Image (cartoon, rainbow, N blue to C red; front, side, top):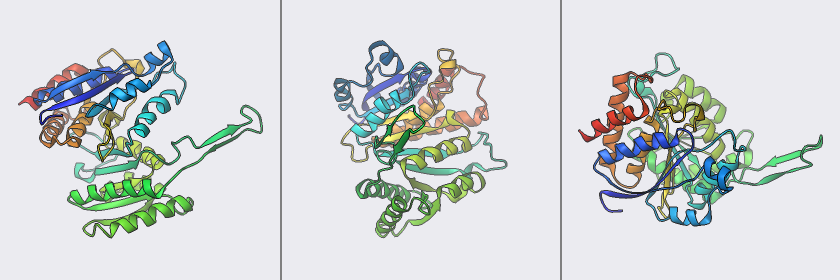
Length: 348
């Protein structure tokens, strides 16, 4: 990567994925960035056609890029967990993308299901550990399909894994105006893992005296997301709790059509991956009905991660202006028209 160019791997994926990614790329180019772009055929169509999910040769190619931009994967014709484990989770694990980063921000003009909530009350950063917890394949099934079936799914938490994501979260909290970190877990019943998380965060917090820290049970945090969202600034939590909490956060901030995310390797020993939170929505694929805003905001996160802060800020500001102008409504424009409008604002 040079100062104004990116070696970008693009996985359009399934359903509306290619449509929204095309608009994200359009907006990135509008900043003046030069994209050395390589498109990869990964997702449901490839699996149905060839039985392949993520060949080792493709994984090696992806490793040579600065970042990965993903649209969406999934199709009703593919069994559950095939692509999730074989593609998405494998990329996270192989590239050590141990930080799943999801901003929860309510933009002016966007409607929230919360009544009378002010945009400034919903502005948080949820940092979810991405390579441990119950999402790794620790467990199994015995006597499947019988009345005596047993299924186990273990949650693996290590001092190393918890420590590095907690440190990252404290660093991000130190960069924000409020300088506050909340650990979310369920230590009253998940005593062993919860104790590890609490001790680790407390120990590291001594190095970040400018950051205030607190603990909150997961069920209480879910309530506070709906009743006191202003309570939170930066949240750090485990893989499963983070998955649930960020879905709730997306709803609070106007829906998954506006929710961006990143799977980050902070040490940059491998590329990070950026994707909208929404799924592939096969029912509207090819109809230009999908809102590309989440993909565009994911592209802004990509730019910020690789050191292009000015470009990231321009994209986010253009999105904010677009959302304010349309007052959160989505129907009047096509996917491409939305991308055109935001790209035009970015270009100035």
